[in-house]
Amino acid sequence: MTTDTQSPRHDHGPLRRLLGSAFAMLQTRLELIGIELSEEKDRLMAVLFLGVAAMMLAAMALMALTALIAIAFWDTWRLQALAGITIVYALAALFCAMKARSSLRNAPMVFQATLDEFEKDREILRKH
Image (cartoon, rainbow, N blue to C red; front, side, top):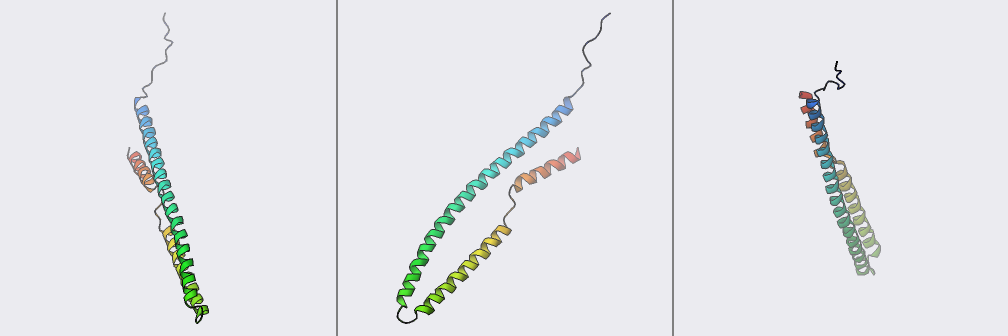
């Protein structure tokens, strides 16, 4: 009398393929997130560097302009000239602040491509 000590083998082929595909999709999406994050970091660093350089140069130019105008009108209209410069600087600062606020509000969503791919994956899985 022989006893079969081996358990019957279950066919896990389709389930394994499905799980393998799901993990492959997840890995691809995570790689996409990494690429997007790296690109965003590089873009942010470049913009930050250029922004700081522009602010430093603009500050030096504004100081020189202010001194030039104040010296030019020192004997006649010094208070009016300085008040005019102050108003121009304040309006320029307000314009820049409004532009920055608008830019932040209208910025594209970070990881949008990854989220779109996840949505496509979800639709594919719903169909099957």
